[in-house]
Length: 323
Image 1 (cartoon, rainbow, N blue to C red):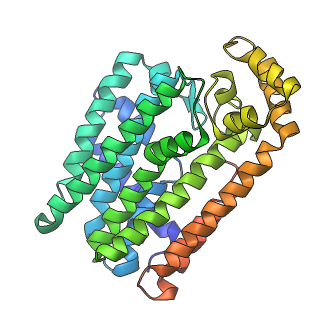
Image 2: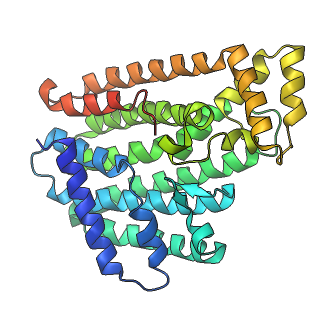
């Protein structure tokens, strides 16, 4: 079996080749820019790891894995526009570096390119892979729409929030891993276990992202710290704080709602409430719980225990990350 580093290097080389093929045309410059910003390449790596659980030959899984990475970066490009985000992985977002129209069009092109990569799949399993991919892509869009809808609502529940992040984040991990497992030779039971494992890990990953947005360091995360607070985004931390808040904490939270120009004053005041109510600790406990549930599912995958070691370690490495 290949190591994580070998898989990351393999995906890195494929991305380099993808960018060289794109060339430097005006529609492709932003695409090459965003896919070369770096990141953990978590989705394609997990896809290849899922294939590797069942087969030592993962060549057939490489292009579909790359397709999921291109699709992921397409969603980031468009999400950054909708969130008016200035930074992505410590660098200017595409709409900041170029403009909004360029970011929209280049993102559309990436969606098409992801399909082109999927078409390199073996014909006999292409239909099944496209079914997984299409369902995944549609659910990601549903998750993003829910995220935007939440901005106009003051009655969002934590259950609704968890469903939103399942759609917006987890299903792409689940789809990537299911496609990899399918290519590797997994039966329906194995595919479902792998998918459900990825959903749990994805939920914990996004919740930890929420934590880092509030309590991380911008030089480590590569993103604007407190951005969710400044934008009044409904995160676990905010929603749970409103549930637990007494009169004093509620007054502070309500004071800053809609105050988008208060900057660090708003961030520091809201963080103080989070700490007083200890919702940061509750979030950490939920992350640990989801990780444990995910690893239990992984143990049920019907392959040799030793073949699951690398995937288990990778999942554990995501806990407590700083970026």
